[in-house]
Amino acid sequence: MANAGMKKDENQAEAQGGQSTGLQRSQWKITEKDGQLTVCAELPGINKEDVKVELTPEGLTITGGYKREKKERQRLFYRSGRSYGAFSHTIPLPEFAQVDNAKATFENGVLTVSVPVFEPERRRREIPIEAREEGSQAQSTAA
Image (cartoon, rainbow, N blue to C red; front, side, top):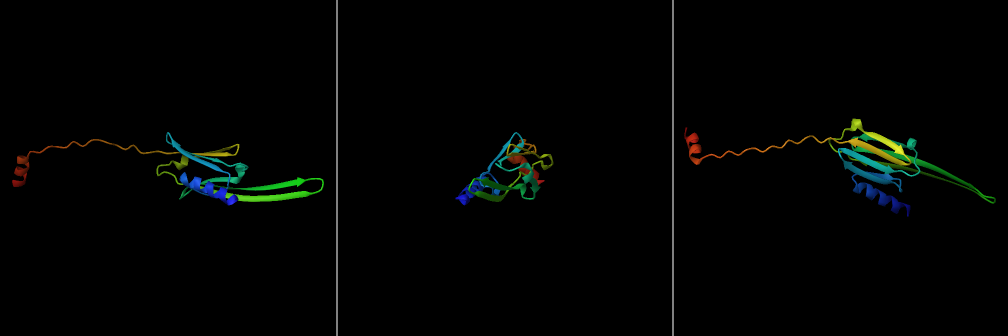
């Protein structure tokens, strides 16, 4: 059953323009608005110290891991369990992303990464079409 959850999460991440592995309960939201690419990742149970954000040739890569240890003591028994996991998610960046101005925040288990995206101004102007008379074209070729 755990693999089914992970597969769903990977498909969701890939559908939003990235590749993901691990961390079954995470939610990723990637938006671009007003010249800002924003990635929000819900990382329940993950600490800021366990997350790394870096720029790679493939794009923006977010990696991390978790380690949980649970101990339960009752009158007649003692139960102990450990779980470990890791995740990695890469989001391709647009060609004109200003990676030097990228910022990341982590609050209440939510990682937000913002990257300004600059699109160069595309100049557009109409080119006038000149009309030539058939007689003037014949004269220029005869000369």
